[in-house]
Amino acid sequence: MTLTKRELVTRISSETRLSQKQVLEVVQKTLDYIAEALARNNKVELRKFGVFEVKIRKPRIGRNPNAPEKDVPIPERAVVKFKPGKEMREAVAKLSPGAGGPAGT
Image 1 (cartoon, helix red, strand yellow):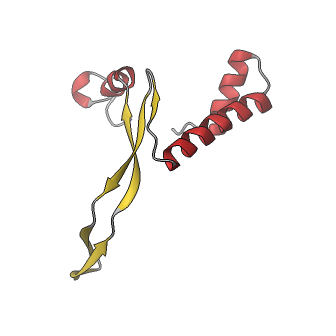
Image 2 (cartoon, one colour):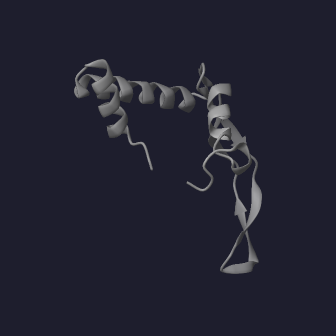
Image 3 (cartoon, one colour):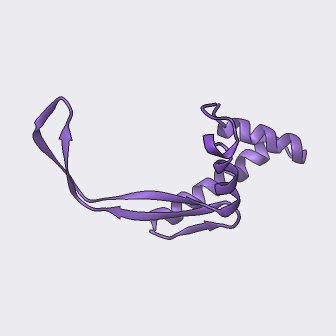
């Protein structure tokens, strides 16, 4: 199952009694500010959630699976990395097959 922005807005709206329009504006502004900060190469740290930061991937040589004899140069590029906070890491770890959680669900 995927949690969409629409579902997030609906759930927050029903729990807070704020209108969906108000919640959507706040959620969208939050996402816009996170994207804006990352575009300026700033780290975004949300306590008890995680950290978003921009990392530079080194250039490398890739291979086309349809023509493996031909090397494909992949240039250096910036990517967004996310490191989950402790609480999220622990909650997700419970999904692992060895942790007693539901596996493959």
